[in-house]
Image (cartoon, rainbow, N blue to C red; front, side, top):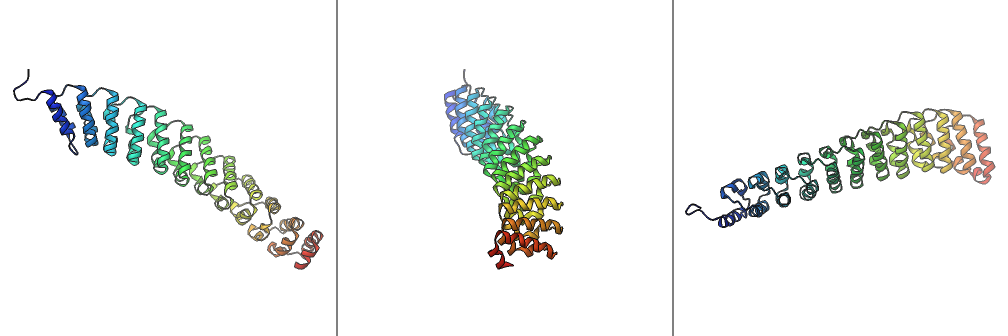
Length: 360
């Protein structure tokens, strides 16, 4: 029995649809007034409302009394496309249990409004770590800087997963990722080292600039990272070698030897940045540099060596390797004893008499 003048349900359904179709409709606040019992009709009305006011529909989706999970997923997707900020702020109201469906919705939201999605992801109620990782990877590929800023919102627990996400972010924006790597909350040293090595190969300058942000404790790991960076970009790496915070002299010598063999020019130009104290170590590094190229003879004064015996030893080695350039730059060594200079000249003459005599 129905009251006289009260519309039949088919009419009420049509009236509700018309109400839902209005721009910025607030139907979801009043849907119960229509007293609609047909669940399929309610789903259809909710979809129309979501397309016209995603925020209001998401906020009041419970008023529709919809139990069908697949229908709720579809309505949420429509709402996210209409008003991403409003929909994601109220995504929990849908009560969606399917983690894969939440991933799909999150991917749509990331495309529509990246910031609000990563800002609110912790409120989505996603418990499945694999789902969170998938969303974070999508986010890192889309906007690595803001993903780095908000990565902890995802609540990802496995360091191996964070390594994979960080690598995706580094591929897109290495500088910002390594700049904010401390925000990732990674405590696992092995994971941090893996990320740093990957970053060093991708962008050695940015990595060397922000290497301390990783909080890597083992000098041996820092040596390996520095070697990767040196191989890719020796000049910018050696210019920033102090940033690695390595105080172990043996470790510093190891990096310098490696750099000298890789590219002697920037090694010679920035050798003072290493802070190597032992003259014998500097002699060994200089010999490696000379063996790889003679540029260091032009800047040997920058090596900061005061030990005359060490300077003489390098000059003799250089005279045997490249007599012409050694003779050309012999004054750069600052060798004081004439007898030592005579010995060096003899070595140079024995290798190239004509070239050396022109510079004698």
